[in-house]
Image 1: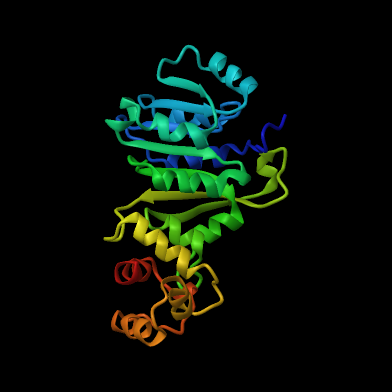
Image 2: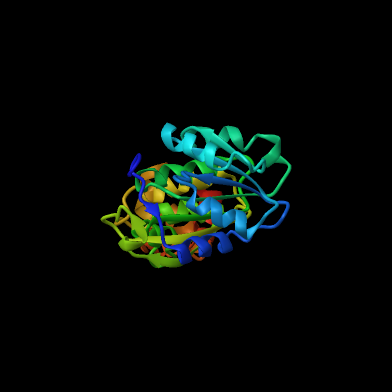
Length: 259
């Protein structure tokens, strides 16, 4: 059975690796996105028998299945809803505001980028996320200079990212047509700049990735090119490089100087 674009992870070693990668402590709370039939939930319960868990499932039929399956476990709450709209609300619940909470899930490919934006905008962020996502997207969010891109720059503003393991199509039911990977995102403090300024710099720099850093900034703010080049050079940034050559710290510096 396939619901809402989901491909259910069935590889037990991969499920256990996800549970281990979450590094659960007894005082942690967990939000699982798209739990499906509860396969990962079972491994999370085994990994830690004290953490409270909230399962957010969009599909009504699966939601009822989960409620029945875990009705005897008072640590587990099942919420029917779309994580993209529900997550900002449930993270304001006292259960999550007063505790270290973590996010986990096998994420449908079509919501991944939107989900990262939602998490990045949360006032109280999870300390750690462990997701199964499309491998190509995993590689993009983990990219660094000289392969920086808009998605990596956006996510790495608030998290350190790494790929834990690649997964094959046969690890899922039904098998997806794309490769997948398990990624860990560890929340970090922003790089000394406010989010609006930082993201304004990201939008400007990656508006046309094949243009130079200089040309993208000039196009965004309208200052004279020689003046912009002078300011960039003073900060140790090469004006004629492309945005892919930047680090997150470089982008934060550009945000401070120009935005």
